[in-house]
Image (cartoon, rainbow, N blue to C red):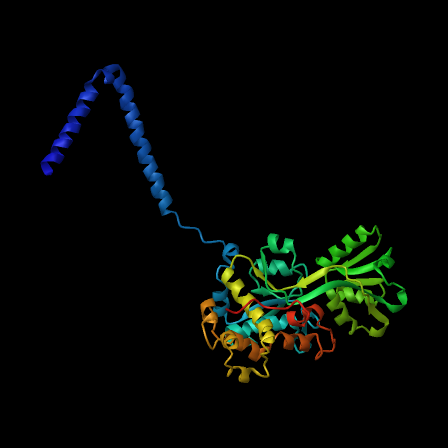
Length: 385
């Protein structure tokens, strides 16, 4: 083998020598070829140098904004608490009292997530956000979840890097006026001053509906929800438009609530849902199924009051849901009994609704479309299988 390799090398050398001395490499052409070969080797040398320099360059750090949601679950667990963006100014949904205690349906959604992750519903830091800054706070990674009476729309879902979670409240846009205003239907709002909060779907929907009917009106808009309602109460506006639930809740806090009425007509559909940043499917799945857990618990008749009894159930569906059988929670990356934690600390969806908006609250707001599917509503969770 060694002899063969040597003979091959000698053969190549003789071939090269004959080629160089052939007429093809005539003396007149030889200098040109020599220069060409020299330039070729110089080019190869420079290319190797550039490659070596590039290899020595430090790898740039990843842009934090692009990876801010890459592993949100890990960041939340390492931090030891959930950061939740809320309004803080809307009773029934998210409101902070004089003692600094938060309450409301949106608040309880975040408490349910904290309960599932930490077995502690109080492992939450709430941040008050107005309508304009809420999406920026989520996109920048300042908050882990936005739970702030936010309407799920196509543009917000696709153009704002938001991933909407299950709908927690089916609402509709309404209008509130003084009883003595003689306003009954939307056409009666012609030439009226109408208060609305800027940066919301209510402002846009009102404009669409008035334009559709060729009705002139004067929009009076404010960034702050309190300023919007204060302007209405002070007489700055003839009417105010917002989600019907917000109007019903705010009406109770007016100085003379009986002198105001929420009109019967509905301007638009307003499905309210929490949102997380798009691009982190694991975090999205976990938040999604924690919310579904509260809804499914009501469907299975599991509540904080009967949880201990239900944990002794022989029903296969209930046992699987509570993590007694199977590994649904573990496979998702959370405690296998995450549903038990939610129900134990926060309750099922009915309990959350009733204490914040329904029969056990000052507002007594009927559930309507927010009833379970089997009770004529729209609420249900996909199967826990």
